[in-house]
Image (tube, rainbow, N blue to C red; front, side, top):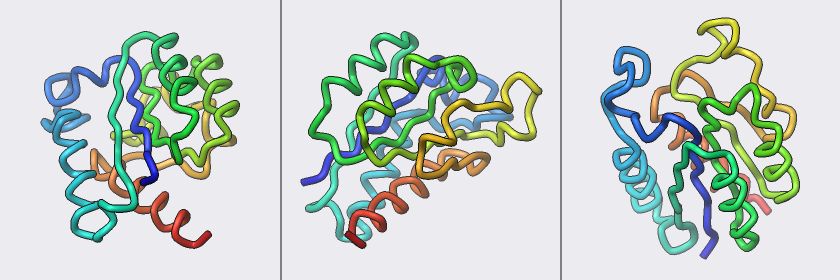
Amino acid sequence: MKKILVINGPNLNLLGSRDPEIYGRKNLDDVEKMLNEYLTEKNLDNSFEVEMFQSNHEGDLIDYIQSNKSAHAIIINPGGLTTVGFPLLDALIDSEKLSIEVHISDIHKREEFRRNSIFPNYCASQISGMGIEGYVRALSDICSQSNEK
């Protein structure tokens, strides 16, 4: 079974209660449920599994990536580290995993300081502004790319 890490950075523990007009009212448990439902609906639950992780601490995120060498792919929402998380980016690059960057809101239509992610050149793609459905899109893309090989 191929493990897909779903990594969420600072402040995403507050998803569902923080700025619901921007991020919606669903939380990370809802994201995990949606991802597992997708795998079941597509009959992929015997091939792929998702493992969720969230931390407000960059070092914990790095340790998590480094301790999961056997993982197949990574879906990452760097949250507050999007523009400044160079050590996290290095860990992602060093993992050599297929990675997709996800943002719930459209960071390109937000405040200037949120717009310049350091991750896109090192991820297969960036999904921004689809709400929590962006995680499902990322999972779908990973499963499709994995099945093509």
